[in-house]
Image (cartoon, rainbow, N blue to C red; front, side, top):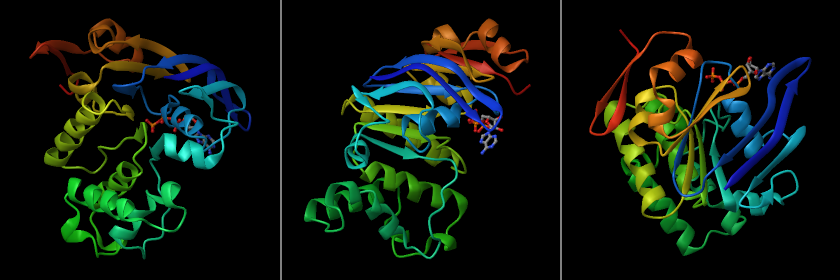
Length: 252
Ligand SMILES: Nc1ncnc2c1ncn2[C@@H]1O[C@H](COP(=O)(O)OP(=O)(O)OP(=O)(O)O)[C@@H](O)[C@H]1O
């Protein structure tokens, strides 16, 4: 479980998160939703210690993220951040192989090579494995970064807008893969997602943030109802049920 207790965060004079307390359960998919600027990425960065926790406390399966050694944290959680600053003159296979670094510290073993090849295969990257990142399309680059995160083989996957640039085929494939790793392998996934119907179809648990505060928490049925959605996104919405899941009509 990830426990977030009384977390506040400021950048300069701007308060970004206000006393956020949450529990993200292990072993399923949690979707973080909310309008632009709500603080979703900031919260994910704090969980992964890309930024230090200024006030409050975050633990991941009991490990305090501010005090846990980097190597241990990197074997516990992997994050796909929204902006990645990795050298573009890097080949896809090398990027994906970096995901294994916390396990081998620079001396890859056969099992690390196998994990890298498996991740390349999983994300349809084998034909592109020898290509430089800057020669790939946006969606292909996104798949390469996802494969690196998967190759890390952690209990927790934190993914900030992983559907960015993915076509319908690869978006659905990714969400099914996330559901599979959560259900069949007991791993835990936290995903920031703007397309609310991916949260509706695949999430077990939804957290809505607004203006740096928790606006709603619950199952898809509890959070994805017009009253809650309209208060979070400030626009009218209709919600239907399809295959026992909510389907949000927000685009018309
Ligand atoms: N380096 C920074 N300097 C100043 N303000 C920042 C900085 N980084 C983030 N912010 C502000 O913090 C707030 C929360 O940003 P954050 O990226 O966490 O939101 P988000 O919910 O992920 O938004 P989006 O859906 O647009 O990605 C925003 O108002 C943003 O402008």
